[in-house]
Length: 127
Image 1 (cartoon, rainbow, N blue to C red):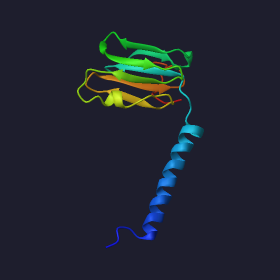
Image 2: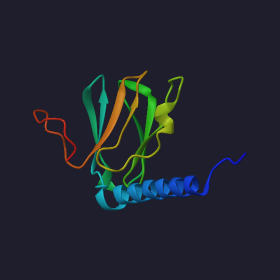
Image 3: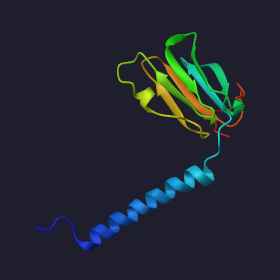
Image 4: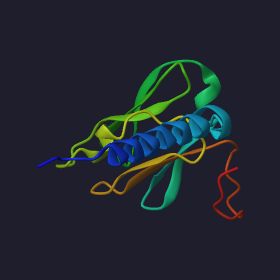
């Protein structure tokens, strides 16, 4: 019994190529580099980090000192340590494009990357 026919392989190859092309277009052409990382604790903005500073830093927020962030020279930020059991936030990797986000749900911490500083009265849009 054959596992796949020739047309099945062609269709799968076309879908894989379309996915790779879409990802490349998103990251290289449409992906706008974020300039700020906003860190929220319990849905309140507690810290805004300038990603364009070009310096490395490791820090945490006073509300949750067991959650550690790392700011990289290339303008990205990531969770590097957390006391939560599943570690999904740590495995989310580096964030640098406007619109990217990561959350540590057990600790109620949320990071989002934006291209402009937040205006407290403005709607929550990625600009």
